[in-house]
Image: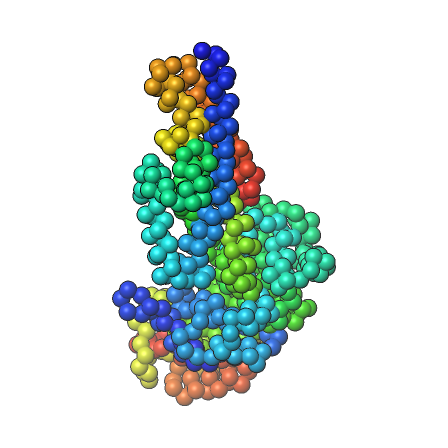
Length: 217
Length: 351
């Protein structure tokens, strides 16, 4: 039993780390600009473009309404194109990232909306360009909120990555389902869950700490 | 310096539009402190935001330093805005930046080098007396300190104009005085033209050279602060200078105040006078020189721009010819006389 745990857990943890790590990174790179776009193009935003705002908003909502397991299957052609395979850890990163981008995008949007309008107005009065308003005012002021949103995204991705086990992605969730649930191996189940709990706690702790350090309000 | 001509601003709303400005013409001279006073919703905030085009007027022209801002393309407008500083009621400092970095922001936006920024920021902090606070964050500052940072930030790019949006409305009276003193210094030592909006006459009295009174989107009165104080014409200006309203006067008099001149009844005058005449015992002289009965209804002495100005509201029983003589006399010694109304009764000499 302990042999099982010691041989399987580290590998599963590594697979989870890979899936969550890569998809989180992609989500960060694409999700933050998406959030900025949603705020900036809104009516009364810094570069209003209501049509673009509505279209992007609708795409974001559509992506977020599709249950992850269906999204995963639905985008298999895209996954093949990017990962050159539709099964395994690498293949799981594609749907994970695609689910996470709009998720983080909305959280970033919410964080940016918390920035007082008066600060944007002050920046405009100083002759700031729209890009400068984003880089010098909106993003720095919303940083604690963005960090908090990113933390939530990473933790959600750990949950989603378990579902990705369905396409043979491996990882902790997959281990728990295959050994713990299907083979009634309670020890593996408990060990897996314990590792997940510790992992989530650590991420939340680190995220909270960073957000607090960035907050000067 | 600043010329607003035919300024109109209509906000579109769900039920038609709201006219915030209904044709405003104003000229602000170089080097003066110009105050705009109005109640909330009078349009003063919109008016100020039109000067640097944070609000684009629906119609009219905004000329600053000879340049018509309404005709400028965005990039040129941004350049002009760098020459117009602005401070805000709630300071609008970036919470994520230290005091120093807040003051540096306009220079960063203008693309100045790190060395240039360092050279410009420290003197600015010294000017507002916050050198020791340079590494603090705005959340660690008091309201007065935060507004000083706001002023340092607004002046960092060496603007020729400073716009003040209710700059002292969120501060306690003592701090207000120190910020107003700082604004005066900005005006006198740096030669910055200041336009400020406020709902408090105290602010106008303290710093402004000239004042415009705005009501329902129109300028109802304009002039040197001293003149407006001594001789307020528009009803709203009268309430701003603390004059009792017709209802209040009626209550104080214990009789209704009417507009119709009455030969038999009493007249109610408002006397406005400057220090020299205030020192002389105006009332005593009046009673000794003229056959009249006089009742003081209310009176105040206020400092306007450092000069004490007095106002007295008096009720007078006198023959029309005596009234005219008394009035001529008062005006000859520099007292401004306004008729507030008439009361149908006579004063009896105290026995």
